[in-house]
Image (cartoon, rainbow, N blue to C red):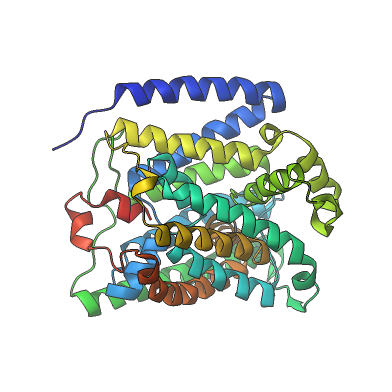
Length: 403
């Protein structure tokens, strides 16, 4: 039975969104107000589609269920297709990162952290916004880990790397870009078919991506619709900000501001000495596009939960201490890993593949390996070792699918 929207939380969302829009307008101008509302859209889409990354890796490794993994590949293909004309013509810049030890280790640590933190970077924001108070501890760990990553980053950046560049530029010229695009889509299709074959072999059938579509406003959305909505939001982010969607650089900024307030000389660190980062550290977070979009994502998930009548806040006092310590440690590992790997599941994985950069695939593989180890550590933190796929098919277990 469908739940009714919750009027009071909807009123809270409306007042909060209007107040924050006004504050962002005063601090950063109209462009950042638009970025904030893009974040709201992305948060709403993530929640309504229960579009997770940590649970997608876990389900695939445990049971062979590939619905979320295939939804990732669909999202990547749609986003790369939308990005291609703007990247090829230089209208916007993608995330193209060299391959190196820092990328491999960072993504591996992030994969472990996703399982301990019960969510990825986007998941931490959107299921916290929808009432999972454990995410506050994950977010605090994210900031701590990001600061540690910033402090150690010069060492990792000094190691040898390989820079294959964008696939759109591998063959040169306009027709070379077309060939690079075709090869990229073929690779994504091959990966899609591979994980689907694994699912069929282990489970006897392949679950469709368009199943479970509910009300367009109140939700839930199918994973296919969620991929479409997220791809559109990613394109609008590229056009508005001139670069793909990112999340975790804001966590490093928030951690830096908190550390500075506590007397830690973060401005002496190499990364924060760069003019761009020093300016962001000294300015308001409402002038930082990534922070503004993160605030919007949080409120968008809050809105989605309120529209669907699913907003339920956990009492932190009822959460086992081992769980709180586990999700905090997961946040630390994800924050540190994201800095080493130049991004998270959004900035490095989605942003990398959508930018035709091989580092996106490398990030995904290393994070999957890390997730395999992280899953073995979950029982120590009293986290559920497995999510029942049937709960998803029957519309239950919404929080677990979001993790």
